Image 1 (cartoon, rainbow, N blue to C red):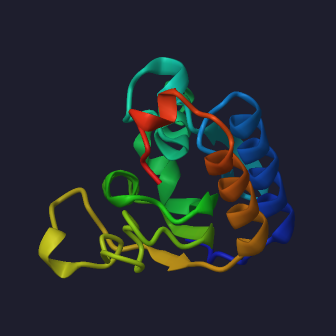
Image 2: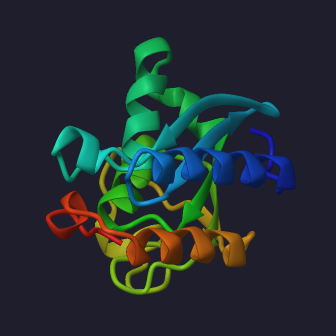
Length: 165
């Protein structure tokens, strides 16, 4: 198993995907999953578009990856995401066995990677398919926060129902 090394170009790509979410009236969260230096999936928030509060960026991308790969692909895969994974996404990432998560800004309401909960490392959550994963934040946090602020300032009718971040 290889080790993970942060690469700024992938966080910049995640920010582009977050902008796409914003442009589609979604909470601007974007992510990319990276294996062997290559992006294997992009994901952006889609709860407003789908009227399904579970359609977060990470879940969207995980679903796409599992269409073409078996779950063991995640053991050598890193996630770059603009906002700290929420409790739901942090748990999903733990279940699939992600290697490393790099995130932009913290999620002070629902963060699962240290801001509120430590889902990524909590020993009480040990199951046969769940493992701890490394997580680092504050990667282009200012840009991620600016996108979120822009989103919450504008009118967002669906967001009143699905304000998840």
